[in-house]
Length: 147
Image (spheres, rainbow, N blue to C red):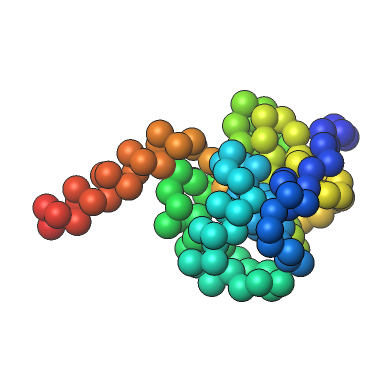
């Protein structure tokens, strides 16, 4: 069984002017996209993230689609099997498990607590990067204009 590389991270929430509970989506988006905690919180507040409340999976999916640069990876299994089968250490991921979201960035899980290796994975999104995100938005606009 491979070990899961873990790094304790608060993702800048300690230095933020916001004080929130249930902010794992904010922290995960912040780490995965190299944005500040406040930038990630501001973006997600436009997509139904309310203060001190979590987000449903469908709301997270819509927010990531609006953000651009994320590709959903079909995966059914545990965290341990993700690390042994689908995982690429050069890529960044947002991983959703039961009532929690955490980032994997360049081979490490960045979170306030280590995930259990046998936790079932609900969803995985690969972050394609800033250039891919802006290219995806431009393509979408061109398609809308021509049709």
